[in-house]
Image (cartoon, rainbow, N blue to C red; front, side, top):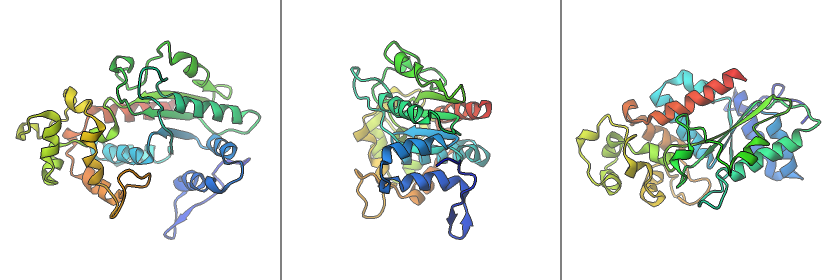
Length: 278
């Protein structure tokens, strides 16, 4: 692992798909001796990483970006490699994004005295019950007294080459961004939407619910039905590999752009700007 991925090609269905090379290498790491050390070394060879609670979340985000902004926007995101890493936060006693920041600290440790390609690390957290006041309008987390010591040590390293950003969805988790009146009406799921916002009518056509506190903070149990709509045939909704990506693509394709939250644009713009500047 002394080189970057430019000299490696991955072939899928007879076609070279080089943006999948890092992802495919990461999928094989479980078979490698000293896998943890090897994982951090691999990460140091990737130009841009996103640490996210579930890899399916990143695919949901990309499909939402495509639907809201267009294909050109998704092309920027294709070169960012997702890694599943929990936010490790469920109450005020924890450090928000603590596990993700620890993961980055380990990458920093294993980057010493090695050739590094890594430029950007985006740590995107489920908001859960985290205080919305601690999240900027750009969806970047504020440096609270609790977070500051952890973020300061990883915010910029490798002689300034590698930069890390702690972010959060504006809603409890990304599934909450799939609550669209038009799409749920087509799937005959409006009763589940009504259980969240109390009153459902066609006034919600072309509305994105950005101002609805009940929807933004709805419990995971109330939103879990969305996963069922994207579940693999005979799949387990609680399993790691639960997602049928074709069903996901079809579902998100039924959401009108006006019913997609501006948070999706904000997250995309933040990532695009940082990738362009570093």
